[in-house]
View (cartoon, helix red, strand yellow):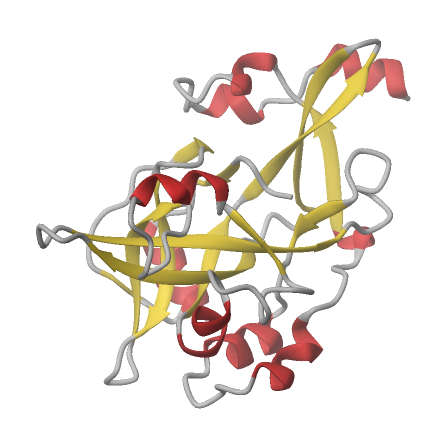
Length: 229
């Protein structure tokens, strides 16, 4: 699954790598949690790509209460096309969630220790996402998203059996293509991301609280690394 992630890239890098229009300066985020706003990349009707801030936790358009979003931060890629909450978004409202890395927790002696995962070359990750537009009876609107997950690769399996669906450049182009509305055409992107391109290391329990959102969250805990060596 994916329960916390980071995005701490300069605006210029986001525009260059993702070919997107960034309409605002984004604060660097080191501990993005469910229920918070986060950056997603969408294709607008005119064909341009934009980076927008949406709430993490997808709220279906038919939901009576936006609180359901707290249970829909992730969508299983294997079953998204069958689930009422996700199937229309899979056809028409796909997005990319840019990330610098994400967290997992490993249980040791009855305690959970946080781990940080990122690409070895420090390039941004591209999570496959779905987004929705919800409107209340009073006319209030909310745009929200979920991150798709897939089976864990060899690096993550000892910690968790799921991981975010990370797209490569070619798959990202297909994922954002608004002309692709048949879910079966997306089967090629539902694959395991190579573990040899990733690294994982222990970090401070500072990340356990969503109130903490600074670079100290991703700083390696050297004592734990030495113990594992």
